[in-house]
Every structure is written in structure tokens, then in C-alpha cells.
Image (cartoon, rainbow, N blue to C red; front, side):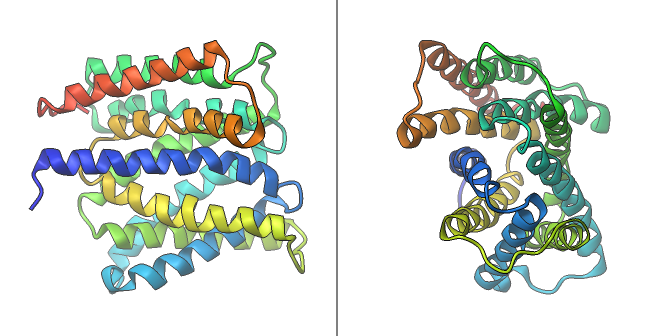
Length: 293
């Protein structure tokens, strides 16, 4: 059996993988939106992810009762709103700017936790979140930063991603985490299908490039990542999770350099260093068996 600390470190490694995959997700979504409408993209992504998740994990999911469905549906609705706002927003802003604005959930998580649980986050969690936000800004934002419709939608999405992290922490400790992962993705899939049918024309086919992006988003960004996140949050806190997941902005920048030939500037390197420093700060805090968030 693994010790409590070993479980936390294993959870951190899982979240690190999630951040890496999500870093590539911004590029995949932006590319797919060139040929696929937003809600159709999300519908196919979540339906495919639901099918893959059930095929691989049905033995661990087991029977779903009304209580499971109620809890998972709450998380699924929050997830749906977050992704709907993010996907619509990406049509009107850049991937790098959205990467930064989405990651403002790193500040929102401890504040929502404080309101929800009536417990003040630890000082290190607050300072770590602020340092992380500055680092993300240096990694993601250029000198011509202005706010538009897409940015406003992205800030709404960031709030609901923060709420999603809090909701997973709340429900994961009292139910089968594989059920929670499956129900939330399934509920989001149903809502996206309904939205797509009501608001967008349904295409008869997709380009090979679009299918590549959709499969990446469905199998890796959705099935693998949300399952790992849900399991990992059973063993760690919401503020800790949000800071580690903020590494997606670093990975997005690095993948842009490797795959798209973008330039890695000294300012971006400083931003990366700040984010890693914030994560180290939180890791040291949690190694002392603190009960603070």
C-alpha cells in the first residue's frame, strides 16, 4: 500500500501529465475550429470520450444510482458551461491569450474555496497563486494586450473551471471516482449534442486534419485527463491542483516553440521559472502535513 505522501506525489505526477496534454489542447482546438463549428466540435469530442471511457473503465464504474447521477450531473453541467464559454471565446481571441486568461482560475480557486468552505486558504497557497498568475502572464501575453468578446467569455470559462475543480474535490471524496469521471463527461456530452442540434448545422463529414484534432481532444484531453484529474483530486487539495494545472500555459508555449517554430523569449523563460517556483513552494507546504487548502 502507498503512504499518504506517496499518493500525493503520484497525484502530482498525474496532474503534471494532464497539464502537458492540455497545453497541446489549445493548439488542437484552435486548429479544429478552422473547419468545425464550436458546439459540433465539443459534441463529437465528449461523445467519443464518453464511449472510450466506458469501454476502458466499465468494470470500475459499476452501477450508477440516482445519488451518483445527481452528484456527477452537477459537475458535468459546470464542465459544459466552462468548455462552451472557452470554445466560443477562442473564435475571437488568440490561443496564447486564452491560455493566460483561462489560467486565472489559479486565483479564483482559493477564493471560491474560501467562500464555499468558510476557511481561509493558507498564506503559501495565496502567494503561490499570485506568483503563478504573474508567471503565466509573462509566458502568454504580448505587448498588445487588450480585452475583447472572446476574452470576456474566457474569463467566464475560467470561473467555471475553478468551480469545476472545487466541485470535483467536494464529490470525489464521497463517491467512486470513475463513476464521477464518466457521469460528468457523459452529461457534458448530452448537453453539447443538444446545443449543437439547436444552434449549428451538422456536417456530414470532417477533414482528416479535423479528425486528428478531435481524437486528440477526445482520447487524451478529455478521457485521459479528466479521469486522472478526478482520481488525483481524491488525494490532494484544490489550490494545489490549480497551481500544478497552470503548467499547461508553460507547455503550450514550449509546444508552440517546438511544433510551430515560435520564439521562446527571455521574458517567457522568467515566467516559466516563476511558475515552477510557485509549485515548489506549494510542494514544500504540503510535505509538512498541513491541513490548509
